[in-house]
Length: 509
Image (cartoon, rainbow, N blue to C red; front, top):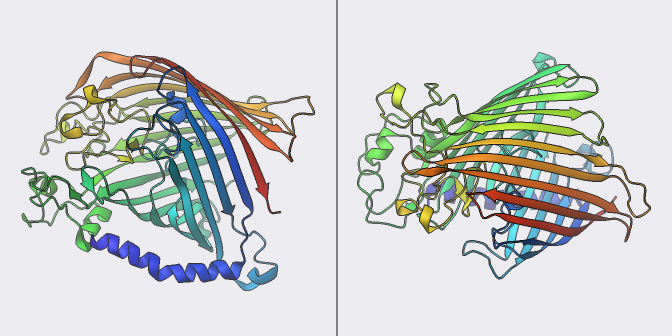
């Protein structure tokens, strides 16, 4: 067991009693209960792309599937400063648990019948929040509902268990009179005990600034997120010369944690601990995005424009992969019940990667970034074999697409053209308790494979999705959800599928 994982466990144990005491003192009863039952079906054995993507890893890749979901949540108490036991308290506590049970004859080997996508306790004091466990999150300046997903952390995989301290919402910096606000996170997580490299850890941090107050006409955003996989040991203990050391153990411990957090790649000379790969690169597998966005209040509408620049192997520092990135524009009507509330257009490009050559001493040829693949961490930028980042860089599709040694993806050079639409349909029927919400997503991708293993010919793929959520005025209020999706092209099976469910929410207020 690594030093950092021991540190993580010790932190949890030391703070568990304090969290339980705070929880007990707060007398926080759950304020939301939910249950949902549904089924997925398709014309082939595959679940269509947009039914399973960006669903936090809870939708199996194979259909048909019956699913049951239940959740209990307690949010922060907004009245704690003025009433009851919280009158003089400096802390607030929240928690959540969500359980998913999938039943199918076609589950893949890495998929499970019972999943726990959320199980966390969080504590807030002032602008700070600490949480322990796993919680649904996304990182990056992008649309949160209709988008293809942020490049580095899209919500496509099961949430990673971690300890995180954060400023969770944009908070004005006092001396700027609210003109500058900050949001940020710092986390340590545990990835997986399985795979080619076992017991790997996650280092994660983000920092974003907002220039302009909430009431200003123009607000400008900027910042970055940094993800790093590190530590662990290889199942192949004989090692790979220059890449995996004999014994299979990769650099770990407090000193190497410093190298991971700081991204410093100098000062290491121990050839027993570090391979040639470690000495000429950074400790661990690093990636992320540098993001910029602008939000403009047009009175009746709000315009949101964003750009995510991708980094992984140093190409962005020399601007030779600057063509790659996620570009988006969303226009939102400032009426939550509008028939057409959101219109989104996105373009994702990952084909440059700084060019087809990587020469470490030549800044003009530090290319072949090979996004989401790594020579040491061959399980890739994934958790439980689901891509953590954009779902348009997928895992290898089958034995015919596997790299040598099982490297994660065979397709990370893609163009994606995407549009989304969302709004509310008014209804005039006593059966419905309100308007029907709908979403539409249409995506076309050109998939080039990788520089080393290009697709010949290029694989074109269209994936479409439409969904409705209708509040039914029966049994005290039930949500009916219906979705339809289609895949057509040469990347996935041609396929039509759907999802229908009934969901009941209860609140304690």
